[in-house]
Length: 390
Image 1: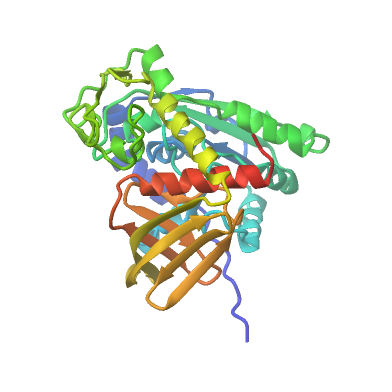
Image 2: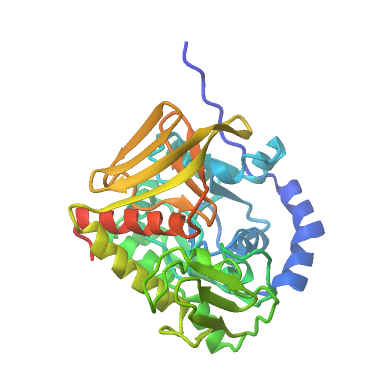
């Protein structure tokens, strides 16, 4: 007998108010300084919110700005695995990243039918270098299907507050620009392509450009530490996975070339003066690699499977990416994903996350700091080639 699926929990106003009172106001007045241009409070639900996702401060920003119009959030199961069950009453709609989930659509409809709002982060993961990740047209198709107004919220400064590679948070001013991107009246006639175009345009951001333009100083002792996991290839000698970082300085362990990041986020002493330019150069290099028939990227990992609330070791193994796709091997098990199965990957400096229909696996790297970044770039560029996207 099949199990009856329970309805999702609507965001509990009392819990959210409690969180804002004891955490939100203190955090956003003393740690971030959030300035909003427009407000979700002034838009009557139901509606869909799509927002850029460059750091976890933008989640708090949406909660803080939208109260008392409590929002349900679509969030990856990997982000809530350790949280208590009470967090579901904050309005969490869990899903597997980069996987089709028809039950999630039913949950979203349920929330909207109860005159609430739903927030979706169409990038599906944290920004890598403070600029947008890929936003697929599928989000526009979903918005069109749901037939409610679309609101876009672009955050500037959230990535600077806590870059995905950084060890600590930094105090920065943040702004949030709220737009009614598609009204209820317009939704009936607007095309999916136009919805997608507006989402991409409204969520365009560059946090390092924002930092430089507004002369935001970030002067902390470990300014660049962790960045070597993202900028993994030396622009001078071309060596991969030999970059190290100390303080504000990146050093190539092969040729010894040093680059410093200044308090305005700019790079000094190397080929590139912008983090984004260095990263985009790496993308060009990887795209050339994956275009070759003999391309292969291999690295060793410790594999873990999500069981209940915990990740359980399932042995050491390796991940290989080539023209056929991704093969993850551990113990006597093998998981294969055909090329193009993912358009991007969930990752950080230490882990790659790979979902299957039955489970979520994470793979902790045991070598090559920066290999997780390269796997992500390779998957993205391979999929673009398959889909004939520039």
